[in-house]
Image (cartoon, rainbow, N blue to C red):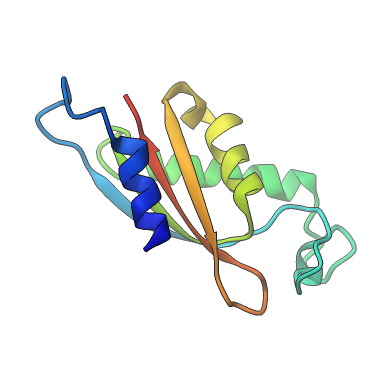
Length: 128
């Protein structure tokens, strides 16, 4: 509920001048973890972990995610994107600030879940 309310706040004031339509996308990004050790159970996704999750793999995954997002609707950017299996706000920020998505005014809200691995969900909203 809090995540939904935050989305409404992000979109507030943007109703005037909106295009006639926009798309909404939901994407299970499957284990979007950074390479930083956190207190939760993410040891598998560390450079020394079983998946050898280093910087190169992390940035490759982020760039692959943005490519799926932009290709999902005939190369037009969705107005709202829901993501699941995201570790934290920092990885969402990396996605919207350090990939092609940075060319669009996305704002993001992250909500952690009760998953033992410490993953949650995020909503990205194009505020233009």
